[in-house]
Length: 296
Image (cartoon, rainbow, N blue to C red; front, top):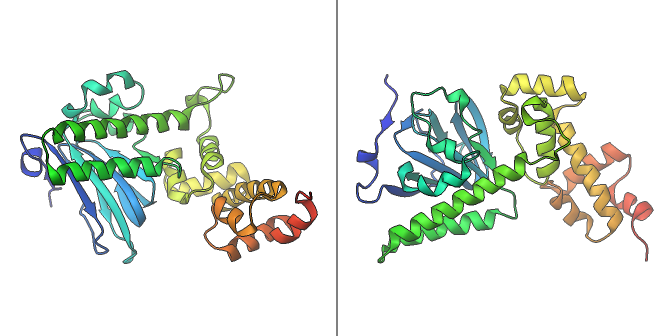
C-alpha cells in the first residue's frame, strides 16, 4: 500500500497556507505518512507515541518536533492514555526570509528537499524545559485565537507568533548544544556523553530511554546496552543518581519541604522519591535532613 502523501493544495488554504490542529483523541492512530509542508508538533500534556525516522518515541509535555516535507512519521495514542498535542502545518516560504539569521540551527530545516538524505538533517526533536513551556503554550494559544477570529491583519499576527516560536526553539537548540570553548567539538564527543549532559541539564523532566536513544542516534535497545557498557549503570539508574544528588544539595540548603524537593528533582510520587533516596544514600530524606540540613 502506498504511503499517504498530504499536499498543501488539499490540506492548506491557498491564500494563507497555515493551519493549527489539536488532537486529544485517545484512539488516535495515524498511519505512517509524509507532508508537502512543514509541521511543528508540540505535546501539551499526557503521553503519546511518535514514530519518526524509523524510531518509536514516547513523548510528553514540553516535547516539540519539526517535521520536514517528505519525512515519514505518525502519531498514535498509547493504551488509551490521555494526551493533547498541537500541530502547526504551514508552507516554509511563510518564514524563510526571517530565518536567514539562523543559518546554523533552524534554517537547514527549511532548505532540505524531500529527496535529500534525511540522515544529514539536524536533530528534529527538542524538549522545552518547564520555565519556557508557558511561553510556547501562550504563543500557540495566540495563534489559535487569531485563526478563530480572523480579524483584519490576522495573517501578520499568526506569522509573528510563529516566528517568535521558531526563535524560542532556536535559542533552546543553542542552549542545549552550548559548551565551553575548552571542551572538544561536538562531533568529537562520545554520544553517551551528550546524553549524560542532557540529563544533567534536564533531570527535573521526564526523560524516557527513547529520548536518550534519539540524542545518541541509536536504536533504544542498542543505546541501553551501550549506556550501561560506558557508565556501568542503566540509563534509569544514572538519571535517578543525578536526581538524588541534586535532592541532597537542596536538602542541605533546607529551603523546601521534602515533598517539594522530590517533585522539583523529577519524582512524581513521594514514596518513589523516598525509596530511591534511601537506596542511594542508606537513609531517608528526613533522616538526611536531620543530619545535614541547615540548622539556624
